[in-house]
Image 1 (tube, helix red, strand yellow):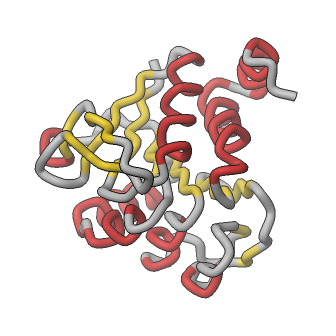
Image 2 (cartoon, one colour):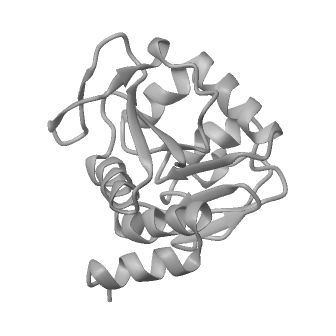
Image 3 (cartoon, one colour):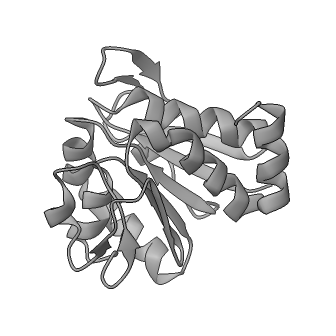
Length: 182
């Protein structure tokens, strides 16, 4: 079974975190939510409290097929402060493993040079932090092992793309049909 870790930091955008969790689990993919702080309780940007499955230091991530960064503010800034997470992302990228980032979260990848020469997108206003990326402004971009999405409005498309990359286009299409995505 494929394994995904979705990282939650204080101030994360709830839709951008929960939509991938829900869609990936519907696709029978093993998803673990991970708090980047030392507590499982994480408050989203709109004051919705989520209880992560684990805290960062409880995971070794060696079984991961995909790492996902939801956006939101100040969630993205809090993700960007977690040095161990950034090191993990660099290591994952070197291995060619899958990484997904939505909204402002692609700036975490951009800051580490992981988007260099790649098509990428992000929430408007953060383009200058996608270091050496080709910012497209599209709702969704797939560049090799990295998927970026623009924001809340692209959350379902982002989640279905992650399913497609892990289980195939047909699985994603079938799931979208079951969920009545039009």
